[in-house]
Length: 291
Ligand code: NAP
Image 1 (cartoon, rainbow, N blue to C red):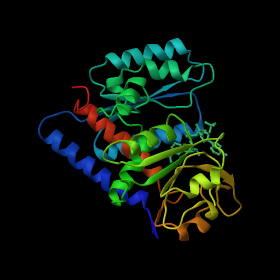
Image 2 (tube, rainbow, N blue to C red):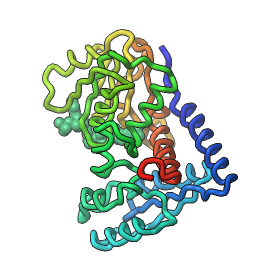
Image 3 (cartoon, rainbow, N blue to C red):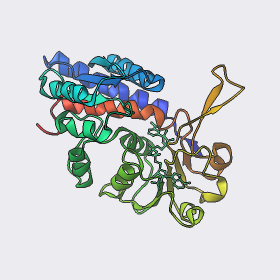
Image 4 (spheres, rainbow, N blue to C red):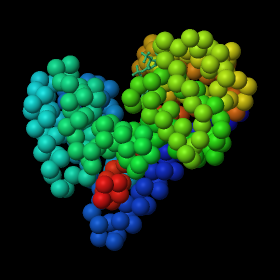
């Protein structure tokens, strides 16, 4: 059994991106420029945006965080998006989710110019992805693909069971793994799936993205399966200084001995997500997808 080391893969890709940026700028091109828009004071969002800023600095991108107050109206936010869409200096930008309840996330996502949509959430990018055209891939699914690629995990003809059908994880990873090149036979499970245990136990590759701590137990896993745990749930803990710890969707200690490969939480899929955002920003800087 191999524990997939997301930190190692992320560090290796970060180095590659930094080398490409150094090469670009040495040839006189400007460094890719990412803007993150943060509305309100959500603690987790501030931490995520902080990590993104730090990673941009590490790979040599220019980055700015546009901080807007909690009471920003949807109209004001859309006006900022319009300004970023038209700013020729900005290669890509993200609007950190979740947004305050009075703002429609879908309206915001659809207002972003697909050419600058480095989160890959705009329906134009989703549509291009589903059609197998070049697009900005959503970060978490792309991170999973990078892990499979790095560890040279065979996917062709394998039965991949994805638990969860969200627009940001389950549905896109299921679609991508069914495409030519990855060639999985994919089953998507959700909260209405019948015989979930049996379906998951038939998976050669299981991707757990349902957000229920330690939901996947050893009896649900075929011996030798590859298990990718996307879930992150914060639970109270008296063993940590912070008073909480992170758990995945997989009961790691009992599932790991049955697997060929497994991702831990933390340190598996998590570190890959930011790297995929960096990959998309590099593509945006090079005008690789839309010219
Ligand atoms: P989400 O939008 O809440 O979607 C959860 C999906 O799981 C839904 O499709 C839901 O089915 C399904 N589900 C819920 N309970 C189920 C059950 N008992 N049996 C089968 N399916 C069930 O969640 P998400 O945004 O995709 O995120 C999933 C998890 O991944 C969360 O823990 C999140 O924190 C984590 N995450 C991690 C990263 C990372 O970087 N590692 C990135 C994104 C998300 P229905 O559609 O029927 O409701």
